[in-house]
Length: 255
Image 1 (cartoon, rainbow, N blue to C red):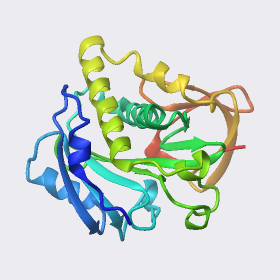
Image 2: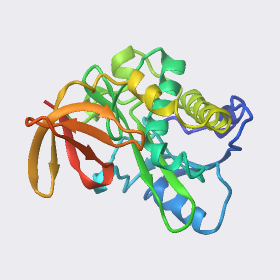
Image 3: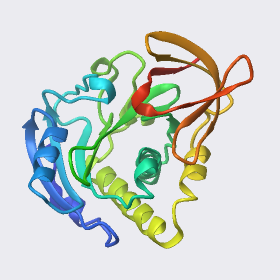
Image 4: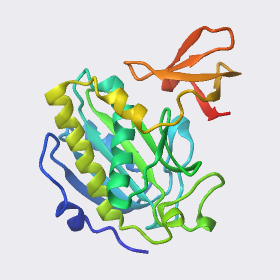
């Protein structure tokens, strides 16, 4: 197992709207829990915790996220986004994680609403956003980096599997954080109108049939577009269009 070296990350960070404060735990229950506790203490935006192994890692809707020690990139960061960025933060986070992966490796993940990054039809990374009391948002990111096929669950992949060689997790983290800081700077300069088009440009999901679960029912439709509020707009068989909010639906699948 390679121990995560924060100095390698710090040496690659650029300055911008977000000032990163990096912290490391060799193992923990969950980086989300550590970040939540730090947010309750009032730490500044940019406080980031990285771990080599988490015993109780979780994804959206409480699903578990487990990986062998030292193989995945696992981190959570505290953000305090402006009010106009807040509803689009899931899209912004997905775009910046994908951008960091592409800058580092040349691989361009496909974005699947609301929080998955897909490579060659397999899940590569996931994003979790939690909002405790107060203005802070906790962004959790898990990227399958150096796992072997045997380490991965069904329908998942890693950068090592896809590229055929290991990837430096420190370099990848720096690229993701730099892309996120640059996105914050751009939102400050230009507003937020570019975020939805940026997400669309990295996703092949729109126009494809999907199924989703809501209120205990399985529903089918076509992913039509992304609304200005970040919701997924789905065209139903009768021609009507419904708006899906991430927290209200589960198991969004491409048909």
